[in-house]
Length: 568
Image (cartoon, rainbow, N blue to C red; front, side):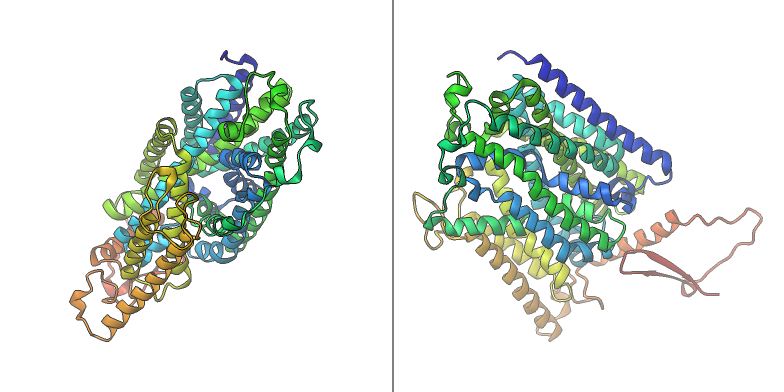
């Protein structure tokens, strides 16, 4: 297929504009506050996210390439009734704002993993980084893969080149300005998505090959068979509750100025994500009413089984004028990049803070951690690109990672935020193990994992019809609560001596599960934080002041701030 020069030029211009906006945003922030070079500046935009930019970046993060292309795909293949992601993720944003945004922002955390490490210690809390990282990388891979297929269909561009260039552009401006660059480019990208897709709808709708009266409402609306009610219900539960424990969401929540603002922006972004789903849903419905033999002049036999995943690029290519398809292509590219850059930054932030610094090098400087974030961004971008180019079942891997986030992370996050006084490391470990085992035993046909445990209503041809993922999540939740209470009862009643408390959950007044070494490192970090953030200097001719340990005290507020107290 020959390269479409006009489309290629338009996408190059679009990429250059996005790159310029990202670099400008990073430069603008650096010029305003040269002293803000720490992790809070790079990861959380100095906790100074504005209302308008906040709404745009939170909405754009959810409205990714997979969100747009997947909505059109499922309407074309199964009907509108099965287009569950836009409504499920919207409810997730509402519930996230209602139950999680306020407590997380009030506590002054930096990442989603901070409350786990605060409660369970650095190492056990760090284990939860694995499902979070898996979800983030595979999400980025799915986004890049969808973008690569779109560019290939419309421009005739090699898929490898499309994926690598897109990942490189997103990586470059993320490196330059951190969350500032990501947020400002999200504003431009969201406007491109809205304008581009809305523009495409009337042109596709009025194409001579389209006859909306030729198809029944059952064709584009879809139906829910009785045996699929359990699957349908669980899809919503997975999207809603599994859509909350993502670092890309909490990175924005923690970047707002106040907890109230973080909650409000979650509600508004939920509404925005539903509105942004309307154009791809309409384009998917148009595809069901298209005589594709006429639209393609017989060059392609478009079917739901063979072409469902690329139906949106095909609609743009064959049902709209060339210049409109280029704008629509820019919209899909913008949606993909607005989420790929967010995923790169969020997974890199968790690695630098919760793995590299918290576990291995707790005494490194803020500037050193920022450099680690830069390196991690490059590595994550490379991994996401590699998976997007080499693994065939990207969708299957993404589904499994979403399952793991739902089964493993959601119950953990729920309890550490709203049941913190009672949960402990013993319950957390058992919860992870039991949830993972029961999920894997249920099998996954998209990955070729066999069904070892047949849940109720299992059908050899249709698969697991029972909402077993939700059952696995409930098992993980209940086991966490039961084992935590059991361990607390055993040690507090002295049925086992404290020397058997190997995770150190009950040998401290606050019942923190951090080991003595972790608590010591935390203390050193707090003292170092005071030294780094205080600009107090004594002149060379001033008298030395010596304070004893009793005369200098460090106290930590619940927001994580250090209050030095001097007694003379």
